[in-house]
Length: 583
Image (cartoon, rainbow, N blue to C red; front, top):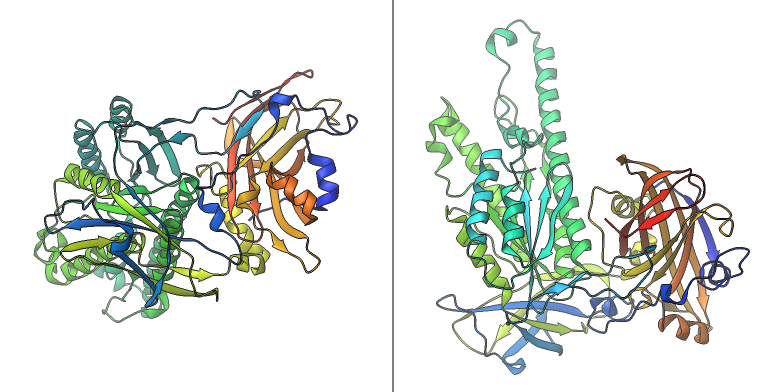
């Protein structure tokens, strides 16, 4: 769990402690080129993250009867409904691939001790994310997916921005966004596959009886206990596998949230079922150990669609015959085949569910995986963006179904099916343990940085002016924070900044975590000043000489929005030190 030294300071005190021009006895003056101005971006969806007003974004893919993109639709051609009630369109635009290429974000000149989590790739078109899933996919099918990706990259369309992630026991970034096919091919070609420690749970529902020679020597009660142990072990492994997968997808949602526009997530996987229904050796249901993951999958789909991420699952197993006819299922091929078929269809159900929730499309039962990649990217590259403010202002957490109608026949539309109308402030009402789960995960190095809450930070190495402490000054984008007005006209905010320290030689184990909560209210003058610049927070860490990686994080304690980034810090002996940008 999230273990940290928490200090809560009111705004007036913390501004005095963390603004960049301070009492020299407490903090060194910061050179002018290190100012923490975080420019507001009017196109960021963070503007929708307010308690009273919420902009719902719906990306719509339109295809004709031949499967070709329909590109001549106007705003008046669309009608959007929420729970059957028509909504007024406030945003309408059309996106399609153009000749302009994406490029890394141009960074302003800054000293080496400034870091940020701002999106570092700009593109006029939809972004594509390749997720190679080694957690839920056999090694042979991983290699088939890799070969399909290489074949696709041989014909990669010009200026197509792609990033590549690998999911194993953790989520790793293999290649950041690039339009260079040679770089992508090298990264994909170097992937040799990984054996999953959790895939034996795919046979969890086929746990057979204990071998006859052994079972005859055991008392019935002991045999039943062994069987129950087998079942519980299988359930535990499946639970871990599902949670690791969904945590990785949640992390991708937070990582991609700050990038404007649509992101197409191509997920090469054999997936996992929405339900795990176990039976005993006699075939009787064992409901005590049954699992239903629909709610967790729905939550993940909600996070992805809110970040404008559409999932395109691609079954890495390719075309699969009827399992009940497969001799590999053993002597009882019909019985085992029925179970295997149920697991296969269950995995496809998960793929369909996530694709439908996010406005993507699932691909399975086909061996031309490279064409599935091409179709996924092509499908998600041409779309219409619709936006509306819901007329129903009752944020009661219920699921609201979205329906888009088109005043033209023979056009198939694909879009997110709805969203959960949760009060953004409900996060603040959760138990502290539940609040800290996502933040604790985001502060580990096992997950990519999060762009959901943009910020910059300056890392000040130990010196006499910092009382020999590492001081981190954060500047959060105020347009992404939630301000609520108090009865006396003040603007109240509640955020937190944190520093988690890792030794560079052992990045899997955190050495310490320091966090500081920022609370208080701003008068109109202070609020206006903050909105033109940044919202400050400061955290301090005591460190001995050595090489470190700092995971820096900020969180809006009203909505749970998180931003993270990394800084590499060297504290040598005697006193000079060096800070590097995020690795």
